[in-house]
Image (cartoon, rainbow, N blue to C red; front, top):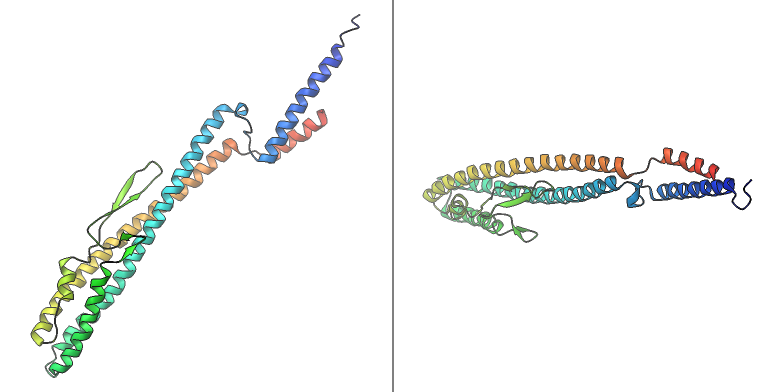
Length: 245
């Protein structure tokens, strides 16, 4: 018979200690919402979770860049719409100025309105978005994913000859009005091409943004599977360890 060493008590104490540790770990998981409270809980899962977290952040940043680029393109198109209206009015004025029943004084009035609209087009060429020129010869590079890949939006140049020539028209005479109409028509054709270019870029940006949103959601779901606690299962474990303790 052994007197000094109580094996049953030692085993009970050991079991109690183990159950208490498991109870504390279960409580930590429930209170934090994470399956991985300590690196030792799942070293491989922790490493994968960290990588996924970084990728989610990168994709989110890329999506933000794409959203800003969409706003840029929409602002461009907003200006181009108004420029299109101005060119339409300029074309109308050029046609009306060729009317033989109009006097030179009336054509001078038409010219004033024509010049004002032309000045609006010229001024629009200097507009910018957050300090970045909306209309110029420089293209815009947009990040398309979390790894730094990118694509380029085509430049829209309101200083192109089609616009500057149209803006420099003079409809104070019937001959000048005829020439101005030809030039304005050419500017309208250029505008149609430019708006189509902006629209195509915006369409691609929308597709990229949707793709990044789906990717971010799926990455978050993958990370959740690895690191987020299953409350139902963990609550059952917590109740079990409470009973054991």
